[in-house]
Image (cartoon, rainbow, N blue to C red; front, top):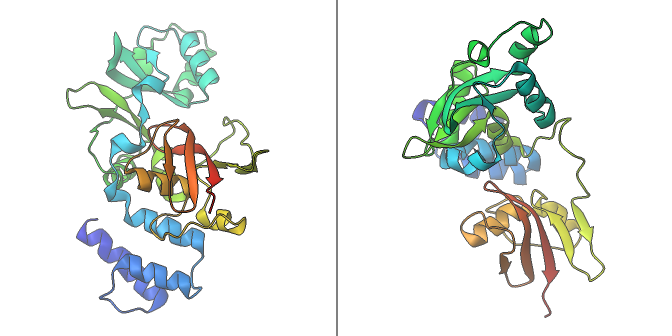
Length: 270
């Protein structure tokens, strides 16, 4: 974190808690939590803000293979159908292939012309794309989005090809957790007990929630079960990978490039 940004955050926390100025910020936040001055959810968000600089664009992006794009020669009807089917309000526009992103088209720009039946090209409506390297840290991405008043950036690999995109929602999810909108399908219950006694658990389930049902995982380094498994693995694991600790075994059931979505937990025999 830049010195000026850290100083501002520290001054805010010091005013809130009246604590000594030589303590690390994370220590101050955790002490305030233990004393009941801030809630666990607020602790998680504050710590996530402090750690934004530790993650890079490549870790939170939507990968190229999952991108919904428009081709610069598409008709407005084609683009409108893609927007309706995907639920996205902004689409990257490419020339020839996804390695050549030449612009972004916004749904609101499209709608202004779509019902007028004018012969308007996608090229004339698209906006300039914002590019970033895979190594750009998330705090810098958020600052760029704020300063330039944009919601989407195109991530480039070391050869200049498209690696993926990062949206403002992706960045905010690093602070507050996963954000669902009206286009997201309903989620099943986050913790389900199976007939064989194993648990089917959402990766975003907090360790506190699991402790309430008897799955106690002794760690203070992470807040969610998905984060715990990624910590064990030293990376975001893929579907089918298995891990274990002293008390439980874990199998990843669903995961993407950013996080574990679902896993099963089985208690080990004593």
